[in-house]
Image (cartoon, rainbow, N blue to C red; front, side):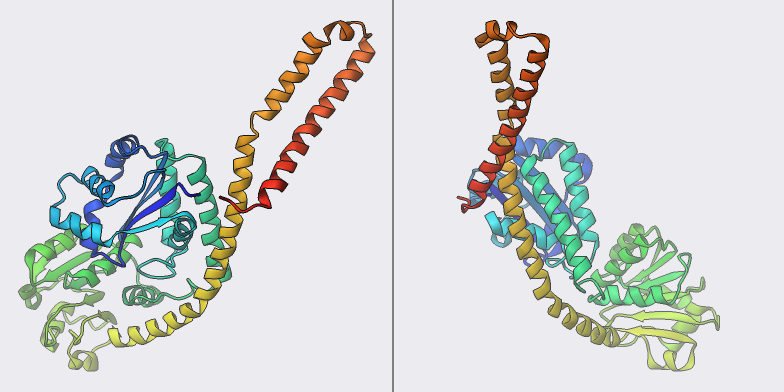
Amino acid sequence: MSNFKVISFNHKNLALEEIAKLHLNEDVQSTLLGAIKINFDFEELMLLSTCNRVELYICTEREITSGLLTDLLKFINSHIASESTQILLENVELFENDEAITHVFKVASSLDSLVIGEREIITQVRKAYEFCNLLGLTGDFIRLVVKQTIETAKDVFTYTDIAKNPVSIVSLAYRQLKDLGIKDDARIVMIGAGETNTNMANYLQKHKFANFTVFNRGVENGKKLAEKVNGRSYGLNALENYDKGFDVLITCTGATNAIITAQIYKNLSCNDKTKKVIIDLALPADVDAEVLKNNNITYIDINSLKSQAEKNLQTRVQEIEKCNAILENKLSEFKTLHKERKIELAFGEIPKQVKAIKELAINEVFLKEVNSLDDKSKEVLDKVLSYVEKKYNAVAMKTAKDALLNKKEN
């Protein structure tokens, strides 16, 4: 396994906007990844690209030096600025051998995720492999790694409570909204276009919500978020004149005072007295206390979500030990599987060679003696040789496995 390496640019050390500079859409991957494999002399290659990580899984004898990484970054994005290149180089994570395998297990099991316990990553790993395999980039080793990785992740999600409850503020907020039974055609007003509301919009859009209106102080950022969710965008000062109504209001701004005053709420709701949902993820709160006091509202705020997040995180911390035990066992299994596979590949030609020796003996070396036999004797001889051939191959394979599996891998 000494040739297997992982090059990881992830959320633990890098801002998401820096990681985004390395994202490649599938069209670009289709042409670029093959060129990377050839130019850098990688035996096998797989790219995993998500919203919070870009990772290369490679098989190569080459040492991963800063020079190689610099060339690789320029190959991936020729327009990347030298400052960003330096940031990426200083914060890249490199893994080799057992650590590389364990890292892939952790990624697919969400133990290395921005939100521990999110199940989406296992699908992303599988799809990334299938895509790279279709391009002819992967080989037998990465195939074996991914197969064991998927089984590991499934065991983690099945036999631990790591994914039982969400721990991020945004995922908790979405979970509560979902539990309220809000329909996907609900009118959603979002105030603020920062990272929190963007993440919330991702959850909502993923689950088929489609009716968005975005208000933001900065017009460009508001427009960007609105375009992302196919919604409408307005400046923050347009709140007081908005008259389209809403079912769900999600707000997260950096304002020092409440921006949803009684009058603003009255305008936004168009005097509709039916129950509304407000998710207030701002500190200090964006919604004035008078609004909550005098209106029919289900209010979800950051303080209540934080306490739930902390409770859920503690539950997950207790599960980490169980997860690590599963990973350790799966790594041990993988080593055995890898050794067995190496033996299978090494012995793959033996059955053909044994068959050739048998046919040489019958058709050339002992041809005269064989021809002197009657048909019945020839039939018996063929059965005996075929039996010996089959048993020899099985014994040879078993003996090799027993011998090699009892030794430590170099």
